[in-house]
Image 1 (cartoon, helix red, strand yellow):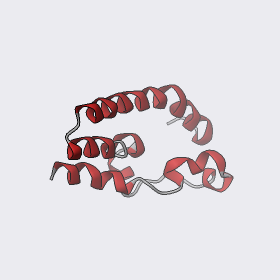
Image 2 (cartoon, rainbow, N blue to C red; image 1 turned 180 degrees about the vertical axis):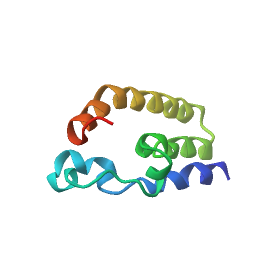
Image 3 (cartoon, rainbow, N blue to C red; image 1 turned 30 degrees about the vertical axis):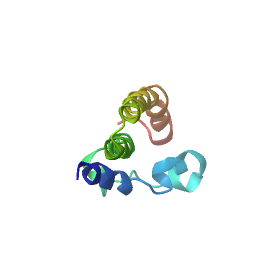
Image 4 (cartoon, rainbow, N blue to C red; image 1 turned 120 degrees about the vertical axis):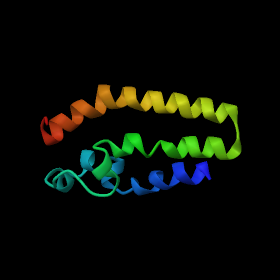
Length: 96
């Protein structure tokens, strides 16, 4: 059951723009930021909800090693966000 609670939000964030399309395709850059779906709840839906999928899988299989990997990945992706993505988003969309 916990697997489903974590995995369902993970499914909502996978569409081309959310997985990096705005970095490589100029037509995405002229579009406003998405404020629907998971992005209505969080401005960083990819980072907040997408990585719940790793936790869900780790809990589903009951692996301590998979839980350790999920923990590392979740911490690592937030470091990536603050050091790489946030400055990039400021460049692409301007500062809030």
